[in-house]
Every structure is written in C-alpha cells, then in structure tokens.
Length: 435
Image (cartoon, rainbow, N blue to C red; front, side, top):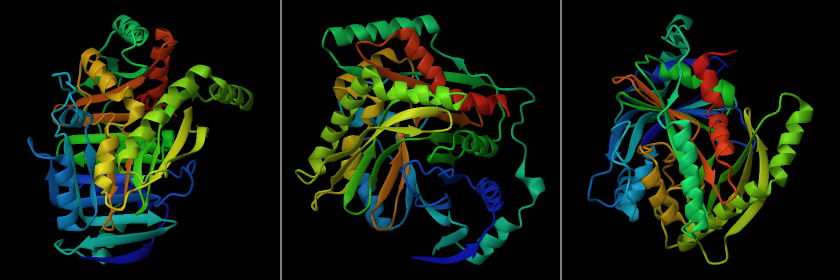
C-alpha cells in the first residue's frame, strides 16, 4: 500500500531533490532533461529512494523467475538494472574475466519514497513500511538551503579519461573483426573499449546534473547503491511495455552536430544518405524484430519511422521504432529478457557477435550496454540502454566510461575510433568543466 499527495513546485525543486537523494545508500534519479524528441514524457524527473526491499540475482537461479516473483510479491515499483554480462547466463557466451567494478548481474529495489514531477506538480508517494509522510518529505526537500547544494567537482583540475586499449590495438582489432565478417562469421559486431581515470574524488550528484544540462538525454539516470554510481546520459530506449504494446527504439548511426545551421544540416543529410549507416541500422532493426517475435502476437510487429533522424545536443542519431503486441499468455519480463542484451550493442548474428566481443574486449562491460529502468505496480515498464555513461566507485575512486560502435564490412578503423571519441564528447565536456 502507498499513500500519496501532490504539491506545486518551482524550478529550484530539481536541485534540492537531487541533494535530498544523496542522503540514501540506494536511489535512482531519472530525468528526461526536457527532451521531447520522442514525444511527451511520462515525467519531467523522478526520484526513487529509501529502499524497503532489494532484489539481487542469485547464482544458479533464474533471472526471469526472480523478477516475476518480485513483481508478484511486492506489487509495487521496482527500479534497477540488468548488467551486460547477464547474457552469459542465458546464452553460450563467455565474458572477459577482467572487471573494472565488482557488480551483481542484476539488482532492483522497491522505493519507500517516490517523487515524480510533471509540469510543476510533484506527486510524492510513500510506501506503508516507511515511517514518514508525503508532507514531511516535501517539507524536508523544500527546506534544503542553497549552501548545501555543493560544488561541481572536488578535483582542482579537469579529469582526463585514458583509454585502456591503445589506439594501435583498437585499430588492429577492428581489422580482425572485419576479417570475421569477410569469413562469414558475422555481419556486424559492436566493439567497445573502456576509458578510465584513477584517484578521482567527485560529487556524482553534481556531475550528473551537469551531464543533464549538457547532453539533455531523455533517458538520463543517476543510480547509487553503496559506493557504486551509474551516471548515465542515454538517448536510447531499449524496451517498454504499456500493458498491451512492447516498444524498442534501437540507435545505430551517429554524426556530430554542426557549429552552424549550414554545417548542421549537411551532417544530418550525410547521415540520412549514408549507405554504410543504413546497412548497419537495418540489420539491427531486423535483429530486434526477431528478438520480439517469440512473445509477440503473430503479425503484430511493425516498424514505425524506419531510419528516423533525431537531433540531440551533441549528435544526430538514426533511430527506428519497433512495436509489437505482447501475447496474452506471456509476461513482459520474458519479452524483456528475450531481447536482452539489446541488438544495438551486440551485432548480428547476435550470439556469435557476443562471443567475439567477449574474445576481443579485454574488460567486462558491467552496467555499460546493459539496461536501467523500472516496473510500475500495474506491470508496465520502461528501460533504457546504458550508453553515454560513467561508472564511479567512491571507495576505490575509479571513474570509467565505455564507448563503442558497430563494425561492418566497409568500416574504416580510423573512422570507428573517431566515432567512439565523438560519443564521449558530452562526458569529456562535463569532466573538463567547460562552459
């Protein structure tokens, strides 16, 4: 059971809410950043905190059974993530033994406090086991003073992320992957590399707030459990379900934004007409259609706005929308897991591409190219693709970001490396503290 109340809030409520979140050992702050490229948003921003239950994957257990049991038992909101290496539990895929962070393959929590803000109205929902009221929570948030909102970075100088894969090794690996394509092993593979900074002491909350202001990505999230943080500025929806219809919106195809209207349009048109990008994109669209098929009503899968071009603050993206109706006898959790990991971060054929990624990528991806999202009490869900993101361990003081791209037959290694760096541009701006 939950009780809730609504309150009118001003523009300063967002900064106070993010500061309030930091008082909890586990929380998720989701922000659509005012981005309406995909249409109207369910909320402007949302905070889930004060966990009253935690669901962590247990080795040897079925992830599907664990999630469905949690949804049935709690009948409430669940917020959390599926890590990329969860694929090894579902398919014959081997992961690199090296980990940057020790993370469970899956973790969700039931929030005792939920604050959802839309159009200047905050709806505060309190779980019955939480010894608090919506009125008291609103008062506490509202009374946070400007002096307590903190500084952007503790570091006196900009933070530089250094690649753990040398440029020469990256280029030679792209050539090896292309040889697999020539040999007929795969058509496409998403190849990722990590970038790391050590001995950094940051304020993750303010880092996230700055990423939101720079990237304005619609599926942004700051997630904390213990000393581990996910700072995510994702533009990509992996999987949603609204009670009848499933939806996936894979991104494949990227160009930077131009410095003026003329160059911006030229780069947009270049992406629209690129045969290479369209070939990459259509392979992933077909893969997603295939992933949704097992739990879809036959004949219900459609592709809306194929090769759609969407403009974000730093980049143009090619995005398609695949929708399907869930079978009445199926569960959204099974459809979610069937499609995981998302095709835009694996390649095609999917299993072989994941096997080769495990062979050529020296570190586990962890949360990167996994998914973060939530289930609602009525069984609906919405999950992003964890890209354009940073992982931070406050105890080890390690900050890491991954970047990747799709390798196809006509890929040019140097261009692929350039695209990786482009995808890190918003993060690098944040860490350089540029205006």
